Length: 114
Image (cartoon, rainbow, N blue to C red; front, side, top):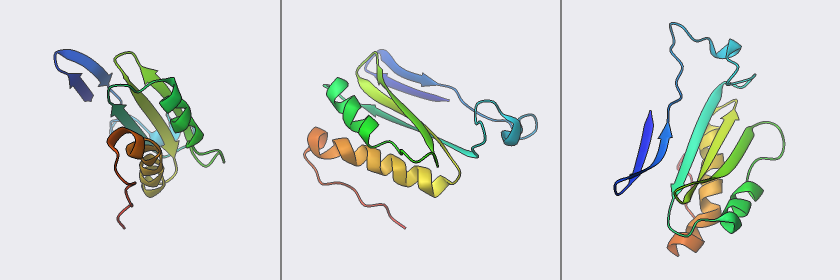
C-alpha cells in the first residue's frame, strides 16, 4: 500500500498487490498478459494539464508496455505502467520523470544506473 500526504491532506492512497499463494499473475485481470507493474507518483505545486500532456507524450507508444497518466485532485500526476520486464519499467519511469525534472526543479535529467 502506498500513502502520500501533503501536510494533513492525503494526496495518494494506492493499494495494489498480488498474493503469491492466492493470485496467479498469468490469470490476473489487472495485469492482462503483462508480468510486471509500476506506479510513478509526482506530487508538486503547479502540476497541471500542460505537464500532464508532457508526461503523456513520453509514454511508450509501441505496445510493449501499457501506460496511462492522470492528474491527481490534490495537485500531481499519477502514472501506471504494465510491462514484461522490471528494467524496462524502471527506464520508462525515469524517462517520464526526466520530462518534468528540468522544469520543476531546474536540474538536469537523471541517468539510469546499470
